[in-house]
Amino acid sequence: MKELQPLNENVLLDITSGEKEKTSGGIIIPDSAKEKPQHAKVVAIGNIENAEIKVGDTVFYKKFSGSELKMDDKDYLVIPYADLLVKVVETDKI
Image (cartoon, rainbow, N blue to C red; front, side, top):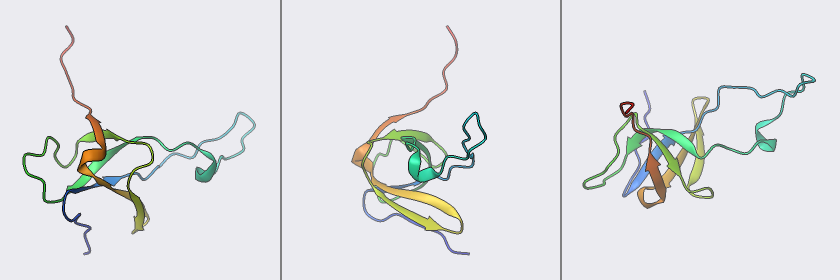
């Protein structure tokens, strides 16, 4: 089994979109015509000391950052750790 492991201070994000978006008339909108979300799930972390994220976290990242790759029918984004903006965390209701 092959696995992608980011090098240096990079993070690997899963940006695979499983949903097909349709118009009200039933026309499927291709991925190239849609604005890509700026959030994804962390799949792997490179050599980063004191990382504030872990595998499985959902993070938001800068809009035009990183390099996209495709492997085994999944879409990934390799992004510098510094280009991550926020981590989604669960909190208790007050």
